[in-house]
Image (cartoon, rainbow, N blue to C red; front, side, top):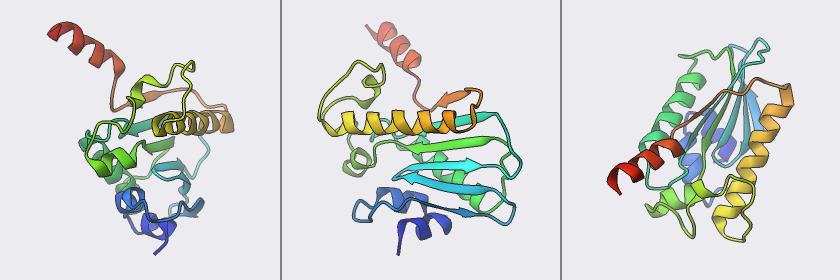
Length: 167
């Protein structure tokens, strides 16, 4: 079964976490007119039937051992595919680090969350993922010149507060 077929049948997590499946870029349209674009493994763009300038990113799986947000993203996409939810805004749904999730570890080589300032360079899997995510997010916002509204399931500020509180 192909990645695109699995996703269209509501098996986003299975398609994302099965590293033996080839990445299949493609799209399909729901009966409601909502378009689902598979941009990469774990990266789905949702385009509402009626054009919107508003956008929302729901990012999960930056750390592979934080699985609850991944399940939330999966349930959100399944609800959209089943047309229980009809989005009116552009959405980008991300499960960032399937390899770490599969290995039940926070990261493989380096903390992915530290690689988004634009200054980091390297050859680790996390560096490659960070570059890919940055390009997909840039594409998402440039595509429609959308207003930026980010919701991250892992917020750096909370980590900083927790570090200060425990240190």
